[in-house]
Image (tube, rainbow, N blue to C red):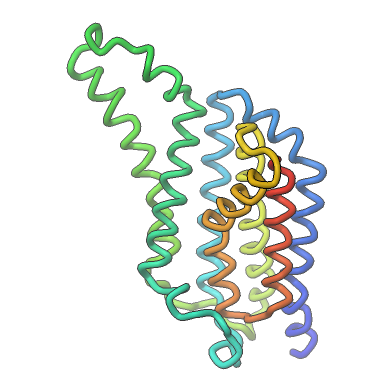
Length: 236
């Protein structure tokens, strides 16, 4: 039991270290891939989104440590339903914007002549198409903020493995998000790095907040912030 607890303490550190290594090895390839809009990129992002939602769900299903409530220094509003819902909506809208970018929607919207399109085609192009992707992305709101019954008990043999999968899934999403931001070539200099860091925080901090609420640790908090800082540095 004590060995398991020790391993759970260092598990986020190992996963964050793996995240840094993955960025060093894979970021150039992924960034080049997302720089050219394509349907393949939509499939990659869709698959990553599904895995990310599954990872967040696993983290939320984990049983908190026995002393989690006493040891946690997180403000209560940070894990409140309203906060999580707003952050989830922001993430969903950002994802929908990227989906539409990869479909070439933002380039074509100023070229398409709605005088040539019929009423049905115009509605599909300008309303139903974007609305469908926004609606699909908003599924994340349920994953992040809806009530979840804790079923993965701390003493079960699957606890460590499922916690590992959850953490890896979140860091994999950070990798994909960093590649997308880098491919835009929008961020540059120190201000760009600060902006990228703030954006990555808004997008990917909530799942680790849920994990920290269950297993509080200043060291793992610093580790994840360092990972996001490294990611922001890679963006510029």
